[in-house]
Length: 184
Image: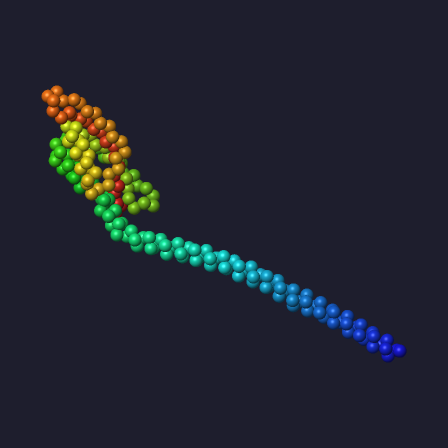
């Protein structure tokens, strides 16, 4: 019986040692491994989110480049309608030639140039005072629109004076406009 008791005690001691070793292995090896696996899982998820954002950004850039390639030829048109800054004389000469062609008296007042930050162009305020026959002023306005330069008319004031001899009425026009100039 003593031998049985000893065998029983040995079994219990062995089982206790096994349980303690199993607990030690799970606490010292399995628990940190699970924590590291969880950390790696979070890092993989964050990397996946980052890569998805990069993919979307890359697709957007690809789309923007494709759209730019479609309109690239049209950008050259913009270079032709914008005069280079400090070439105001070319613009004024074209306006005066149109006034002479249409027999209109033209007075040009040039304001200050506005430079916008992060823009490739500046804005120059211009005002025109026109005197002449009403149809001639209208033709000058049409020729202003036909010029290959971009002029944005902001305000127009037109006064028509009846003719005494039954001819075309005379008129006075004041026009406020803006022109756009490429920066050098």
